[in-house]
Length: 92
Image (tube, rainbow, N blue to C red; front, side, top):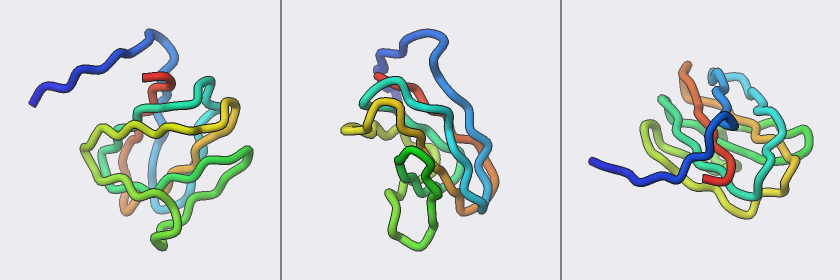
């Protein structure tokens, strides 16, 4: 399957995911494309903590998802159903 993405160079982030919430660096855009190698839950905020109880946005593993309506400068908290990696690309 081919996916067309407009990806600006040098601004993506790699976040190590586990069953404990981890934060990204501040996002410099109001949208982000996320791809995770495991099922994850995501929450945005100035100092967020994600939870895996169904409260936060669920993103299935190995899926490109565009999150829009983010507040520029906020961070994303990510918690997984296991260990893996989440890749974030702002503005894509």
